[in-house]
Amino acid sequence: MIISKKLTFITLGILALILMISLMMDQTISNHLMNQDSLFGTIFQNYGLFPPTLVLIISMITFNFYIFSTLENKFSKTIIILISFVFTLIKTNVLVSETAQYIMSTSDNIKKHKPMGMANNEGNAGHALSLGVSFFISLIILVVITFICYQFWLKKVDNFELCRLFKVSLISFIVLFIGLELVDSMKELWGRVRPYEIGLKGGQFTNWLTINGNTGHSSFPSGHTGNGAFLMFLAFYFRKLSSQKVMFGIGMTYGILMAISRIRIGAHFTSDVTMSLFIMFLLMIFADFMINKVTANIDSLMNHNQ
Image (cartoon, rainbow, N blue to C red; front, side):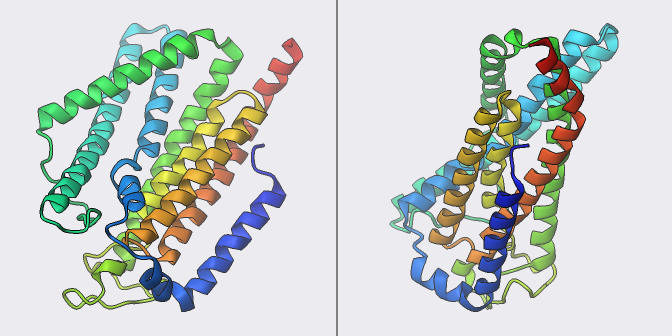
């Protein structure tokens, strides 16, 4: 397994401690660190949402490669590949559209001499790109990543590894769905005001234990931080345990940097980003356990053949 028991207890303990401290220090921390003109915060806000989409694309590619290689019924094979491709294309287009909207918002802010990171964080994708252009860019992204994955990776794997990757892709789909839906549902349920919204249009600070209901605000937990932490899940697509741990470390580091950037830009409180890291780390533990369980026989066969 990638995550040891020691790392689990230490990480969850630290995150739980930060959540407790946040009950008293949330607003103070934001008041001291918030700067909507932060280049660091703006870069992560504009370009940092890609990890879930990247995990989805790689999962789709490995899933379809397995189906194409093992399923004999051509009609079933075609339907499965077509549906999964269209689904992934639509989700990739969401990322492209949202990223373009953030970039356009930043450009507009600079032209109007406003803080560059002052963007609409409440889900308005806007119309920075036409539908045709955004789908074309999404298609290019899928084609390029598919070519790279096939040419430099998948065509070189053996049947045992392909079977393992297929199971990893299925669990990745499940974890992605749970993670994204859970964060979105909690955002709507908590209805928490963002740091930069306090004092604007009657926005009032509430601690993270307060469930406000659907108020139109969505600070808790942080979606950007959750998205950033999803980079950890790419670790499961590596074969060697050492490589998995390196990728996990990179993903965790990226998630933490994203969390800091969200506090800096004034989009989230410390508790918002900490809860997202807490949720994603728990999902990582779940995925690590499940993948280890369902691929144990494959690993033993691979080791035996070596």
